[in-house]
Image 1 (cartoon, rainbow, N blue to C red):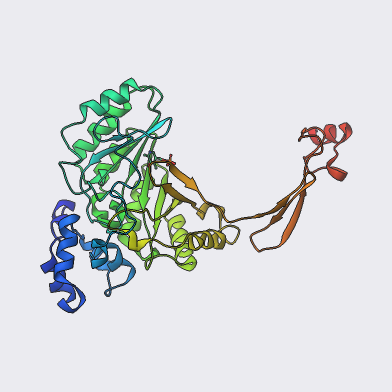
Image 2 (cartoon, helix red, strand yellow):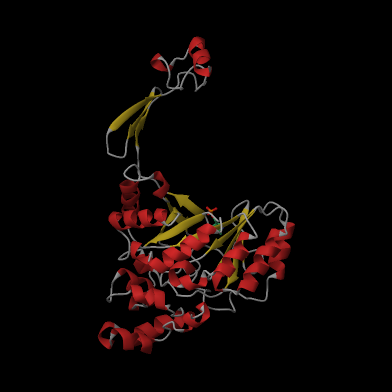
Length: 377
Ligand SMILES: *Cc1c(COP(=O)(O)O)cnc(C)c1O
């Protein structure tokens, strides 16, 4: 059987290989080369197998297009990650958790990558400068959650992954470790029993995977997810809302159903970032809200991700919700349910004292002492 390293080596990495596979009529050699010069090309066999024809949802994710060379509002470091980086490879933006870039490379490069300014370049995510990051984490006792990202952390060797998990686990105030990866989709063969044994030793480990389209849940990817779920790590999924790939409620609904069947909980649905080179993936905000509205109530609440904008300039993730509140007065809140029907909820009269109001028992929200005793029995 081939190793995952051997399979990775079969990836498509040049414009000539793209042309040989898809034909010159579908590719603008010069523009594509220009895009590759800015941000690496690599498409693993698993990702390549998803592409059926030019312009389909998978072609859009992996094949460079001339649009990448056009910058309108795009920002190189749109999330301001480098400004929040106290030492190389760490971004510390939130009070109690940090993002730790441990790998410069990915198995396949997503053309919408928000970190395309450094991903693929080992000089920008240096593999030999972790001492200052570990020192920072040991010193900052408020950090209780560390996210291993990159690039893709599962591109590292087992030995190196174990080194990171072990070193972080030895820091007493770090409570949870997270691995953020697209490997189950791009290189499912990487999820080996040996890797799973390592993960099991360092719990609590949470794993967030990345799937954007239901067709990405191939039998091989699903098997990889099952192996990861069997480690005991809770699995979440981060999905990026992408024009021409998944900007459709029916597609996202099918995606979340397939994820739940694979024991993965949808976690975030990201509005595409205003990143230079990836602007053409952006959709209207109304589309994201329409998708959430099409999920909430209509399907399992377990399958409804948080729709967020990662605010340009470093504001962090900000949730967006469809409007379910029609009005609020001193007496009541008027709500629309998922199907659009209107319901009224009377507000507590004296500022929500639970013994008097708001239990839903008794007339007019009033619960008398006798009722409470009865309920206690
Ligand atoms: C997304 C992100 C996190 C994690 O955010 P959660 O909402 O806890 O998943 C942490 N740090 C940075 C810089 C991030 O971008």
